Image (cartoon, rainbow, N blue to C red; front, side, top):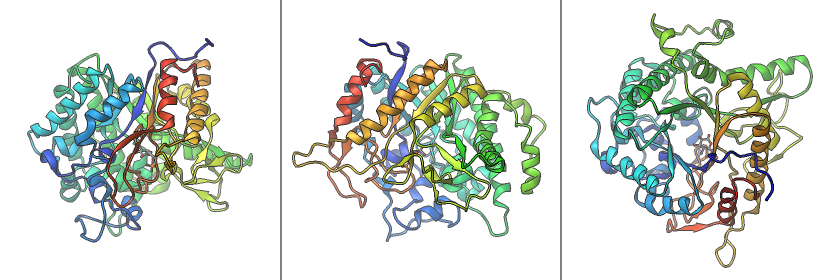
Length: 475
Ligand code: BG6
């Protein structure tokens, strides 16, 4: 057998998020969450961006999260499929509104705790380590309407109460935690990222960075609490990753790329290094931002994470004039179209070397173990006459990215694990479609909510099983 770069204890697995998979949006005492307000169709994006305010559901719209893939009722079947592939880790999130339906209660909803306890026990029965995100693009709607979501400092109290509840309730069952999924998405998609919709006359930049400060405090406090509850707990931050390339070697383009990277890395700089980076003072001045901080805040932020996790789908491109070329928006982060790489059916650039570049930059910057917790190809799958899904394009994408990961490990980077995104087909976060499929397991469901919800193994299922069994040798 050939050599493998992957360590014996490498955590191979897959990832999903409560709001894109569970459904059961009103069961078990669950409250309404931001994501439940996002319809399929033309209003989705303006709402996600915080430009169109929504506080009530409409009868004439379809809301994909309400039933999603019904993971809430089918998780045993789904976890068994993950176990069949040999998963060592399974990443999911807890829906905050299942534990605290309104978000500001003083006692949690026991039915919500019971659901996740069963789910994590099921993982353990299969020797699968859960990796759990506390907040993956869902904030209880009551916190949005009553407090303005993360613009309010009270959110820090609500979130840390919720985090403590989870650490205590699942102590011994869950060891690996992430505080906020893709925390930098707050800047790009403020409602779905952080429950923010803007009022007339507000400076959106001021609102976003104030909210960011509150999330960073909440994340640092949650990290401290996780360690207090159990010193074995390991807590990570989570970046929507992908380096910016300068569109040309014109110095202004190089500077633009550096600034764009900083914009996203700002969050991880604070979470992994424990303080605001020096350049933020100038940036705040230029944007007319004044972040309200309290005297103890700097001390709180010193509670840094144990590891740095990230998603990687595509690299990005920037120039001094972001409008002077074709733009694309992989993962809602605005970017110029890179003529040197191929694009997915949804226009996301495919760039495995970009993963190695991103990992090297992140390790050089943070010197903390990395964890790639999302990566995959959103593509249309057409079952053949026998109903088989021969998704060689997905296998090709994953293979090249796993190779890039192996090279990064050879570069000396400690990588804890890899959880491919949407190990089972689920609702797309950006578009609300089911037809943008990432899974190794097919789910019979369409964009309008039709279909039997039956599960079927794709060709990539068998391929990934063999990758895990060979610890990354057999690609
Ligand atoms: C990440 C998110 O942004 O990318 C996931 O954390 C999301 O929630 C994934 O699903 C893929 O994006 P999309 O829009 O294709 O679902």
